[in-house]
Length: 231
Length: 246
Image (cartoon, rainbow over all chains, first blue to last red; front, side, top):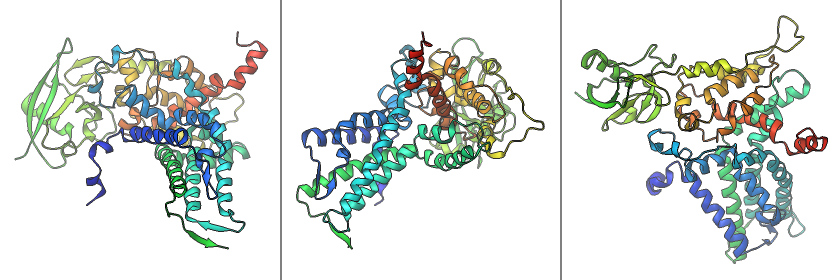
């Protein structure tokens, strides 16, 4: 039986990403406030990397992300509910300010991005710590999990539209100076990742929650972890 | 013989129109425009439908097919499902002239208000610039001015906010990103053209028959350029301290 037959078609509708996002956030909040856990057996929980205090900033970075804006504007506020035009006959009667009123705050996305980018090295550091947990280099399955989530988050942050603006989007000429030639090349490469920004945003969030759940499962005593390589 | 069932919007251009049903013999590879032309030639010669190139190059046959803005000549009848009736309506964002013909003249007025190309001072002639510098502008020049993006944009269509619409943002962005151009059109776009009303829901990008990545490559970069000028808290704080913002 194919995967498409198992998954109900409702979950594959355009709003599946919004609902999975809501589910992931609910899982994250539950994990953080109901069952806080900093780490287990050398694995540091991604929510505590580096500390849970900065989470609101990361949350704001995600909320103002150009990939996520589409979901809540379409599916929560219904501006517009879809691209087909007959669905929104009464929309003209509803107040709308776009990003000129309250949602002007979306323009601070870039500054939330700076904070989030500053946190990325901690994810790599946690991966490094998990390798040297017992004073010798040992690669365990959980470390690979942490590496996957670290790479997904890094690629997602790198594929951000604000990063795109800073590295090359702000330039009009890519061949005028040495710096702009370099910027232009990175811009071209980054643009390819940027085209997948929505998928990366979702994958990175899902992998963080998955890594968190994996570490929790280990702490609960499930025998999931195994050593791949010892040096 | 298999039949294509159509529900077509009919109107004299004044007041509310009505829907009329037609049944057209199906031919392999038939497009919605092909079906409409069959109606025009054989069933009801009074039907007003605008078309020209039949090859998705001119943008004349833009309409709403099953309520989704699309080019009639680029939409195959089979792709809509042979079991259901195909609804064809004119672009509702513009005044209706007759039947499927809308009048998108307002777009040419908006286009005229966008600051024209202004070369930088002191450029040596002949101008030399490289392909990589104009690649981004070239993408926007693929636009065939079918105005489907304007039609699907909920801001243009439902809210009279003064937003110029996706077609005109790419027009301004093509000039703004040109290496020889001196003007900063992101200031114009964010201050006068209502770019702030766009909430990045990407419908314009979804319906574009030329697959121009309108939102990702024009609207968001222009918003980011605007953020540099209008929303940078550091720049704002410095200006405030100097007393320039009062």
